[in-house]
Length: 458
Ligand code: UD1
Ligand code: CA
Image 1 (cartoon, rainbow, N blue to C red):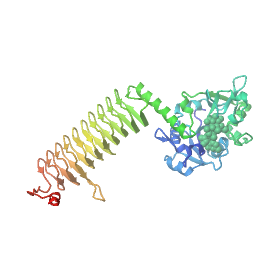
Image 2 (image 1 turned 180 degrees about the horizontal axis):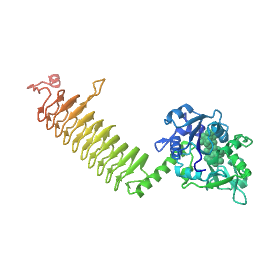
Image 3 (image 1 turned 90 degrees about the vertical axis):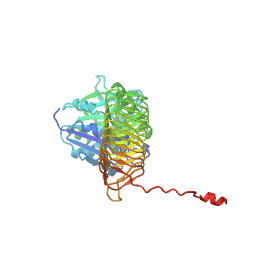
Image 4 (image 1 turned 30 degrees about the horizontal axis):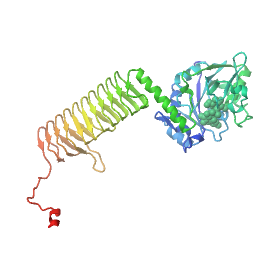
C-alpha cells in the first residue's frame, strides 16, 4: 500500500494538568519550538494527504500558534480517551493508511514514521514498541506463544504477570483506515479509567487475523513524552546533549558540550570553536575557522570563515563576512550586513545597515539604516540619528571617510568618500568628498571664573 493515501492524526487534546500551566501542554517549547510544531514537522516529512490535529484544552491558542494552513483541526470536546480522540478525526480520513501520533512526544523522527508506515499494508497494521527497564505507566504489549501481538493492556488494568512485561506501547501506530473506522465504532469504556482506549483495537486486529508488525525506534528519545516541567527540562537537556555530541563528531570544538543550546539548526564548517554558554536560534551558519566566544546569542545568522565573535554579543538576522571581529558586547539587529574584515567593537548597535570591507565601528555607537563604504572609520560614540519621530531616514558614509568621535549624523545625510568629520559635530548637511566638516559651537573660556563653591567660601 505504498502509494495508498496517508492520513496522519496527531492527538493533542489533553490539558496536561501536571504542567500546572494555563496553556496547553503541546504548546510548551523544547529546543526553541513547541512540542506540537516538532511533531508536525516530522509528520510533514511523510507528505501526508491529510494532517489532522485533535485539539481540546486551549484549542484557540493551539490553532493560532501553528501558522501553517495544511492542518485540519478537529475538536474533542470531552476528553474520553485516546480511542474517542481518534474517533473525532474519522469524518476527515481518506482510505489507505492512518498513522497516529502524540502531540506531547516531540522528537519522533520522520525516518521512524516512514518505516512504521511501510510496515503497514492491507494485511497488516504496525506498532512502534520499545523495551524499557522501568515500564511503569505504559500499556504493555502482550504476545501469544507464537510471538504474535495479541493485545495491549494498560498499566492500570494489568495484573502482576502483565506488569512484568517490559515491551511497551509507545502510542505510535499505523493502521489500514477502513479497519480503524470499523474497530473504533466497537470500543467501549469498560476499564479501570472509564475511557475509550485506542489500544483496545489491537485485540480486535489480532482476532480478525490482521497481522500486527512491530518495530523499535532507533533511539528512545524519539518516544519520550512530557508530562510535567521536570520532564520537559530533562528532555531538553537530553536533546541538547545529543545535538552537542553530533556537532563534535562533525568536527566542531565545544569548550563544554553541556553549555551550548541549539534551538533550531546550527551548520558549521571545519575547525569551528564555540566557547561556553552560547545559544543558537533559528538557522545559523558558521564558516570554517569561526570562533565564538563565551555568552553569545546568535539567531538566524550567517558568519563566514575565520570571523571571531567576542563574548556577550546579541546577533539577530544578520550576515557577517570573513575575517571580521565582532564584540565584545555588540548588538547586530535584523537586516545588518557586515562585509569582510570589518571590526565592530564594544557597545555598538547596528540595525538594517551595510558596512563595507574593512570598516571599523569600534566603540559605543549606534548605526541604523546606514550604508557605510569600505575602509571607513567611525569614531567612538557616533550616532546615526535615523528617526524623526515618524519616519526612518538613511545615512550614507562613503569609502575611506573618517567620522570623529561623538558625531551625530542627522539623517538623511551623506558623507562623501575620504571626507572627515570633526569630533563632536552634529552633521545636518551632506559633506562633499574630501572635505572637512566641523559642526559644533566654538569653545568659550572665561578667565578667572569664580565657581559657586569658591563664592560660598567667602
Ligand atoms: C497511552 C496509551 C499507552 C501508551 C502511552 C504511551 C492508550 C489507552 N494508552 O497512555 O498504551 O503506553 O500512551 O505514552 O492509548 N489524548 C487526547 N484525548 C484524550 C486522551 C488523550 O487527545 O481523550 C492525547 C493526549 O493529549 C496525549 C495522548 O493522547 O497526547 C496520550 O494520552 P495519555 O493520557 O497521555 O495516554 P496514556 O495514559 O499515557
Ligand atoms: Ca502519557
